[in-house]
Image (tube, rainbow, N blue to C red; front, side, top):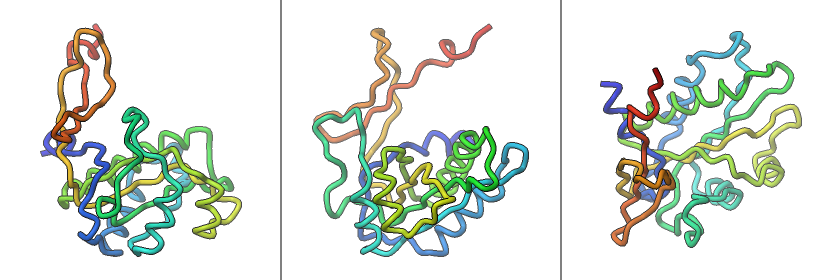
Length: 190
């Protein structure tokens, strides 16, 4: 059921790094993005994948993790993603609505990953020029988002936004990641 997939599809930031993801799995996830809706059907997104440990380490070094967890530098060795999908905008065929396409594509891939027992995290905080050099990305392709993927090694739970209204995610002393969500009554207007 789609509701269960959406609930299980959280932003995971710690993984069983030794649980590999095959190239075929990454290609299947890109295919879900390819088949998703696109504004004006322009289909301006392209994708680069990695499931190679060496290349993954290079990609990892270009990413910033979990801005709200101030004292956490990101996943430690052994807890890093075992696969990445870099979402690129082809500026030669793009349109003003490409950001919508990116969200749709990323969600499609993450739901597909969740269905396969994987988890992921969309990362926009990227050292783009460094990643461009590492992956030899041509100039007409702009790095928009990196989707980090792996077998989740953390528990992520949805909790109610407290009366203060603070929706900042946090980890408790057991390492459980809490994601506050506003109530349906609060977000449904009229």
